[in-house]
Length: 60
Image (cartoon, rainbow, N blue to C red; front, side, top):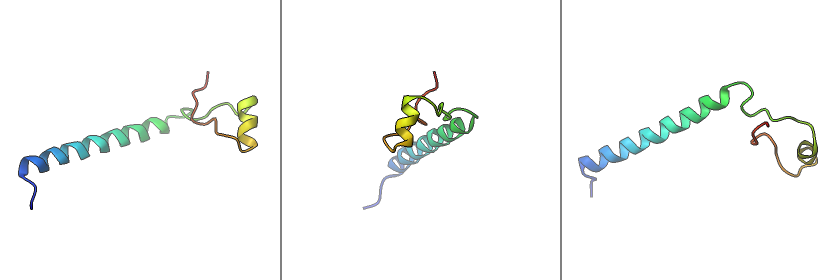
């Protein structure tokens, strides 16, 4: 059974929206410092010991 043309259009629109969202997230991460958390203090020590990661946390 073939999908109807309007179903194809809705799927294509959804795929394009997801692609734009992914590209936007990728561009956002390229801004210097976005994912560069401070590598000092208790959280960084825990990361170095293999107990987590601080790169995804916002720098305060």
